[in-house]
Length: 86
Image 1 (tube, one colour):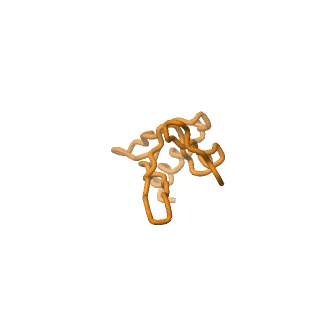
Image 2 (cartoon, helix red, strand yellow; image 1 turned 90 degrees about the horizontal axis):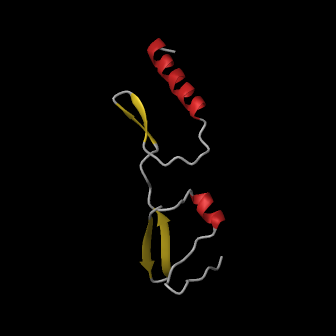
Image 3 (cartoon, helix red, strand yellow; image 1 turned 90 degrees about the vertical axis):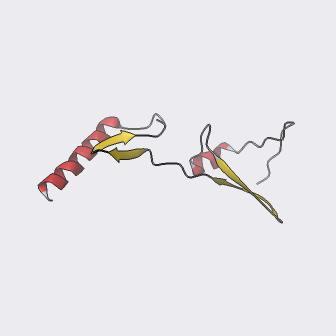
């Protein structure tokens, strides 16, 4: 795949590549230089959902495609299984 630098030296990654790698506005990339050229790697971010004091807390960025009701129901079911020893 060939891409161009703009006048300011910036590179625009094609949308298909960004989508495939889960990149969005303000995603961080690591740049590595080698004798063969450069490599860009996504910087792994913290998980979107974390448990804090028994609560499920959203730490990510909403993407508009989250089924909140189903997510809460799944968490409830998981807690009930743990409590019930299933």
